[in-house]
Length: 268
Image 1: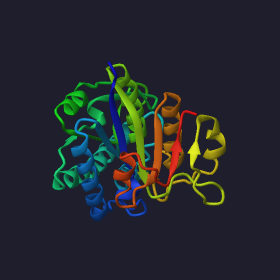
Image 2: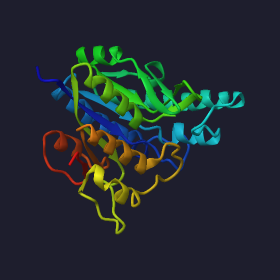
Image 3: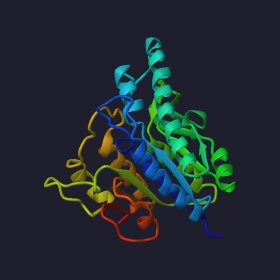
């Protein structure tokens, strides 16, 4: 039997917020993207998983409280709580945008189904996600603060959530057919500011030197982290598209198989 195919879609925090201004939220952009996601989910029920970044909510708060990779000290625990609350606040805004557009979002906080070890996913519980997909709901995940077996707690980016889910789902009769990363650039740019159309794992070192860092606070690494994750997925046979989420209608065109501007990260 052919595995059930899934598409993962990430809405970058830079699309939803202004990372230079803590707590900002662009409801207009979020509403447009939510409408496009609702249409996509209606056309392909039970086959999409949406994730989003923390933008000026979680990143700014984590930076303020110095919640960076490494062991969490007792005096940092209030910062852990504040960072998790900030990430969840943006998540509720995203989920509400989807609901208002008629989608059926089902919120899945990574802190409730995933643990890490030294910042890397080490255990994931998939049944809630599987049941949400089977019910025709639209699962929505996000970057979150999770329990960590070595550090006490750590930030688990949406990129790492996607990696953990793709690996776990592959063992349970699913196949992640593609991942779409929507941000504020037309893919990955080279040194001259031109879009690199295709990246393979062999290209990583060369391309990573040109990948721009995020504007504003981004404690998980910005575009380089996204590229690293896309390359890791490519090594597992999963293609990614890094595209400009500011372009109305681009998501639908990409999902329908149309070639769109951006960078494709391919196994070969």
